[in-house]
Image (cartoon, rainbow, N blue to C red; front, side, top):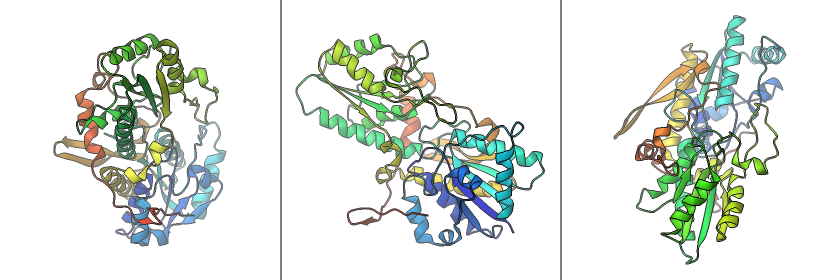
Length: 406
């Protein structure tokens, strides 16, 4: 038997299930797959033998359409770092045992940077042992920081949510005739793509943020206060957006003052709270009304304002990942190559996962204004096509209907 296993890993997005739907849709036009399974909670579900049969879902067109409109990871997720198999192959032996038990020949792992590390290690282990199992990655991350792909599934929808919400916040704060500063903290540890998306709130002629700070540029408290004071010479209400991962010249995070210092299984420090630190700073140095808002998980789960372009591309990448596996392209990741901006056009390609895993694609410095407090028109041109189009959601009892797979 030639069975396929698919799993999801890392932070949820509004588009990751569209990639899963793309894999399942692709199975319907091939006779090379006998049965398709899903692993609960990523690679952890493989190791613990928690697989579910997705064959019926794959044949249900209505369920697949609902899956595309459902946010977060329908199969569940995890953040688990596999050890180096040359040092300790116990988990790898367990994974191979499960693959043998369920006759798995193809494995598609949908996830971000750390997930591609899993794809790379598994492929190398299987290849070294001459196991005929093909492992392929399908990209996912709202952070848009994966190497060798023009952009990442999930980013367009998160960017659309950010642009929309920033435009609404701007309307809200402008109703008062009192000096005030509103600081919005947006996800992004080392890459400021999401924060840059706040500039898209200007597309319809609105002012958008007055100041934008990305984590690619060194941050200075003194320069920040000077920037805010300069804006306040012209207007009373100041709107600031910034990446959660902004750092000082010594490399420390602005949020370190509020951080627990704990790290996840991949060694990433938990960061959040830069906005709150700067809220206290503005209150101390300027003395006006100030508040900070943290865009946390809302920006990655807002399927009600998802980008149609993002969902369609995510689905196509799922199909591309499946095709890679069926064509024998193990150790590869499905990716997007932009052909043109106007009209917007892309191609779906495959790239070596070893060149993706443990790499980060940051916002080019030339796409950040020389002053370090805004973005350039080139960055707007890059992002604008990714937020186009709206989904037609199915509503029941006044709210969107979603699907559950287990």
